[in-house]
Image (tube, rainbow, N blue to C red):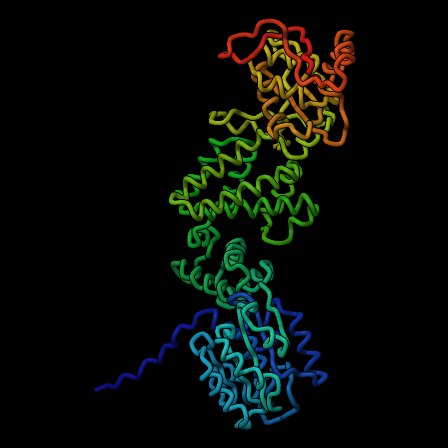
Length: 574
């Protein structure tokens, strides 16, 4: 009988986030400021008794705490003891045990599960005893903000005056929830999100160690989806490597995009381009294509916002800004081209509309419908004047200085995109003042408008124009005026609306509260009345009399009409 040798035991798989966890300060990425501070502190012997590490998930708070515990208790592999050091390139006597959380003098406590005062009292009881093997007793409390108020109070005295052989290291994602009394007793380090470019380089290095070929654009997508968290990025990379049929297959950006449910970046650029040109039909078609391909509506709008942010940065800071932040190489070149053709106010307006659309998409019962409505708003906003153009119009700016509107197909049309083979232009829309209709009334003064209001039976507007308008300037299509303090707030808007209805053209009515303007028509008419010889005689006969109304002496029309025909008016005296 032949005995078969036992097959070698296969090592269990270890996820990348654990396999490539940093083992020393040199392995940490993105935290150079903290490492420099600690290096100087250890070199000069100014080592604090308590540290607090704060930052979002996955940036290395717990890992840094363990490395710091190793640095505090470092002893060479042969027993060389030169004191605390951050040079951990050679594994020391206590390093492996501390890294594996099994050292008797390094205590790790999860405050999320042990929040009570009794847990802290148990910890404090052990503080007074000297370490068993290492130089210091190190207490690492993770998610320290979860401790109860009583637990914090119990910890304060020991935290302020700990024995010389004790060090505290706290880690938290909610630094604002820590009492000020605790923060004031600790040296604080903020571990910031890892930059996308730095994280992408880190992922590429790990992929090479795993002998896996992954497209850099795909790694960039992973880094962007991780939002600065190294742990999240490694977990996503772990998932991406499983997409391969075999170890030799290359992980493409398309595979990662499909795994993450992201929109095709190039299609997102085309979608934004169609919306900014006002082509709602094309924008909706592209949106639907991405949705059918598996992209979430809120993800599509978030990608649009990222592009708008990139374009705005390029517009504000120059072409160099396209190469920084969340922009890939392909995005950077397209961003430079599009930013040149867009106005800053158009970009900021697009940002506001998309932000509102994203909020609605995340809360609407039908996210797809909310996303489509957001794109329709963005497309139709191309027809609206931007705020600076409105201000220039209202302040009497030169209309000829405004850029002409670029031609584009009507919404919903099936015009081919070949019409945009030339470099696209996105000038801000300017509502041109149309030429007067041949059959429209000729208005050359405020009095003409008052007479027209009388003819149109709008008695309210007629009286308000006579009583509350101090005219500053008048030209066909544009009126500048100052309103009396008693004027209704919507008078200028109603006047513009009525003039458009009556003349078939757009009028601009601007309010200038600083200029005095002319007297109102009622004041002028009252002055003319007072100058009449008969009125003068009446005022002499009745000293102190006051004119309270000027009425038409002719018979009034039917009360149902509510408007008197225009006529010469005389005064009634009191």
